[in-house]
Image (cartoon, rainbow over all chains, first blue to last red; front, side, top):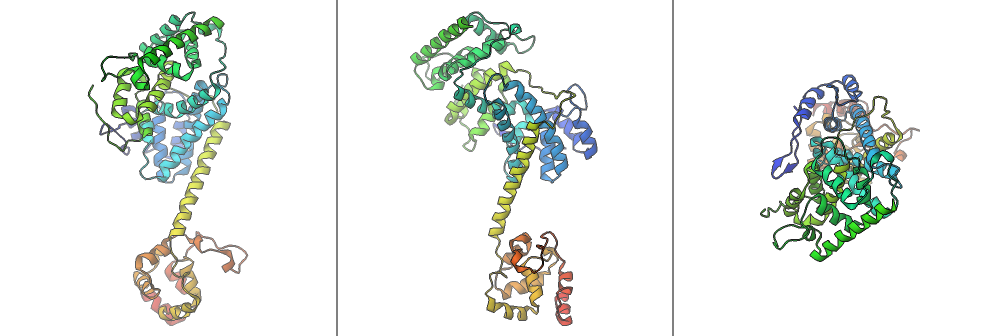
Length: 258
Length: 212
């Protein structure tokens, strides 16, 4: 049985998904040659596939007992998966220094394992044993946002022909709202372009836009106890309305330019 | 929703990770709950939620498989592996140096003119003294009676002397103390018994030490 996690949420310990626990029951007993074979399984559809959460636990255990070969075998596969994921999310076409950012994210992930090995109380990798890719967002989104600010969202690649192109601000809002509410099914062809446009907005306008249109916060409220976009950002009702209006006007201009 | 303040030790990093794990169902109520729970991080949580909302829209399917023919030894993977190895080495060395600095060496700190009297009191010779000083003896094989006796004569406490014997060897493996061309290997230690028998001690000294 795998060592329990120690990170807590609302006083209760985080737990791994059942699938991960089941994989660990088996994988923790595997000798190195068998583990290497399992690591070669590349498709999640294959029952022998070891998911990333499982790999994190195996690596932590290997580090604890100084089993360097086992650690490195799993580490290479995990980093390979992360690199593939990052290439899709931080593509060279969308950002300058994309490769450097991807490298930095992978270095930061490696750093978590260094700390896990050296610091007795360090348990941040517990998040990665629960839901690896969700936790991984924490790493790359921070670096991505920093880079976007640096580049001031000055370049946006042209939409490809099969992306679909929203023609109005309402189209952009529809595409985003559809994707936010309905995560299953075929993707809206307008979505990719709508996200690109939203990402081009200046920080303040983008923040107001996402809070109100995607997360569905009210712009303002007479109830002082109600959380609104204005109270979250710490600005007046008038400011949030102005930022939203500016965002919509800017989106319209961007649509007309393309 | 009533405010439900979090216990203080939660770090910003933990709050952001916890929010990440909610990314697929992120909406106003989830962010609201987080901001009420961690009011001191409201701004950071809000900023991060905006990024999370957009990213989750764009990449809702979290599953990432490697392609069958994908090379896991790509330059980026190699760089990450090297980064890990270098950082681990760096940190291990730092911690090792700290340990070395922290561990006293009561034999090394002994004034020169007090070495001779100590050899007489412990009934050992200079060769055996150097083995003790340079941690060339497996600490687990040194009899407790000898440690107590040596501690009393140095004088230091038994725990300090035990810590000295248990510290890594290379603290005192300075090359200038050795006539040989090569530096002594730090990973080879003798048992107490072997050290006694290979130090040119007199038969009486050997008998005494082995009887402890």
